[in-house]
Length: 328
Image 1: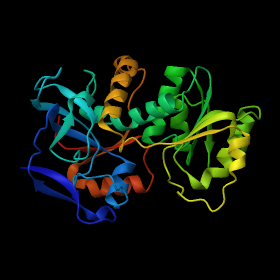
Image 2 (image 1 turned 120 degrees about the horizontal axis):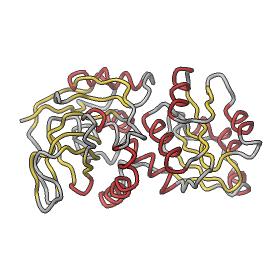
Image 3 (image 1 turned 45 degrees about the vertical axis):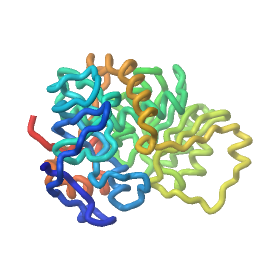
Image 4 (image 1 turned 60 degrees about the vertical axis):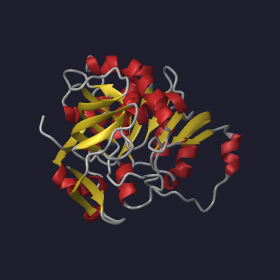
């Protein structure tokens, strides 16, 4: 048996409970991981609220770092290897099953907490910037929620991989200062400034090549004003609502904008494996040289998972919120 976090019924953080459940069984091509750390994501909160229709695992958590304790099938990994990666739920637990082709070796100098802050946000940022957003060298990217987990990852990837001009929004000077330290060129306090005006000022009235939008409905008009003709706009969150009463589609057409919606969690195993493989090849060298680093805000023990979720809901974090499952 093992400790794991389940949701008693759809609702708030009070519905999270640590219980004893059986250790999961391995399928072909899978690894059994002894979890040292898991990370909290917005996906987990949406699942907890009962809004994630494709979440079938009763245990929360989509990313972990730990050690391999069992292998089923041929694998390049060995028992005892330190790995990190995405799982199909089940991450808030002492043991979890991970597809072997989705596991990534943890750089030697990284702790388990640092490692578990990588998979979901960095793979999401890489997918959004490179696969969908097709960010090119020296282009300008506009990243909302710059101090979030994905935001802090995207700033670093955009600067290191594409030498991009990076514009970000955040809601406090503390967060904006941190984004600037990560490499953001222009920082905008969305609570005090009209971000579309600031973006146009920063781009000589041209607008940005690419928008990473976590907000959705509330930012629709201002995002339209901020993007240049033939720009790309990737919707990866709906923190500001998912429904619009009126949409003038002609504006999208007249500016020849490419608008794409995406989520990583419901993607196929094959998609995640290919994304992981390319990410490892292109980004691991930066981790090893510590030119790109995961950003951790706070670490909670697994038993304080309710407080961890509440902390994220209050939008207090810069970077990742970690759950410590086992001491290193």
